[in-house]
Image (cartoon, rainbow, N blue to C red):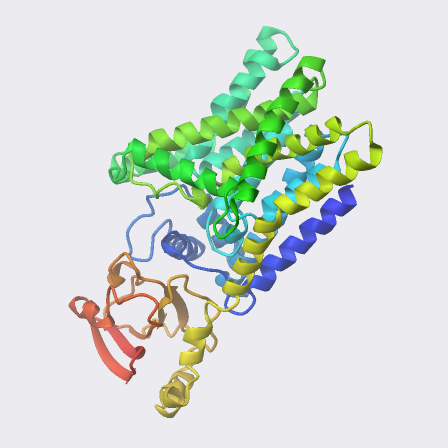
Length: 501
């Protein structure tokens, strides 16, 4: 079965690479800060964002990863996208291993669950954006795998490293510390002295990396987590948003309610199946431990997310933020299919075919959504690319001018919002080559998205608006900070020479 799981992992990894092949991985506001900070770390300038201010809103692990990719003589936008595709494959493989451990008698459920996990609306979009979520998911799944079987000091040490890295990637990773410490204290089969020693080792290893980052934040911002902005959403609003996302797991948009009713039936049957297995003692051992960990992690994560949303300004609970809970939801769906097989166990062929057919039928919406995301991702950048290749634009002489100046060709990134801003800059004083800074501006002023570059430095700004959204900001809004000379201006966009005042 592991060969089938490896094949599925390879297929989904290649599908993510296929999706980003034309224009590269997507860039959101978080991505802009990650990329700029990673670039500055690689240059030895420290954790500095694109506007020259210290990196403050998120932990440093993902920018460090992007900085490490600078050792390759390739565009970090390309290598970052490739790494995220590999992280998708790693999360699919780990989830499959965990599911197969929970359902050892029907290991095909693990493969089916891993496939649904990889193509879900919560997971696959993360693989085509330069975001830290997939790295966090891999670390959490690896932690669950290690902690469910750790019985020696070496396992405790590895679990501490994984928990520390997860916390260093996202602040909510701090949840793994009390979960891991509680497991060591209450479930280790050693003396109490050994338990306390191992708990101390686990907490030391997991908390040490973040302690340095928190000291740095205290010195710079007077707050251990970078003084996040106050919350905009109430607890009730985020509860409603989280429940609405969970509803979409059962009742996908654009599909008949029959899929939701089937999912609800499988969910109910899954709860009953776990209760029956628990009463019979079938959940003893690692299967029960992993099932308990999934449930405990899902409840703790959702509760922590809701509480933190009342203290700091975070995005409304959506598919991205709810992704770490999705494996627990899938576990109950898989348990429902296993329960269906147990009900039909007297008819051997039916006990195999009926759960398989029901599972495939229930997975149709996920496959359809995955195919749509795949197709859309490969065409998002087309309008901007086509715009720069229209006869009018070609005849303007801008392309020849840019080529004569050595501006790199190609547009390897797309915009989710179809409003794209590309800035090419170079430090004329140092003679360094042009560098690309693609940014997308919908909710924020453009000047917040432009990288910090010295006065007198010249850049090329490419602006395009497809008409899908109205203009929130135009290049002229930058006049307070920049001098703009029009090279080309069409109905849907333009190209400008930009110079900092």
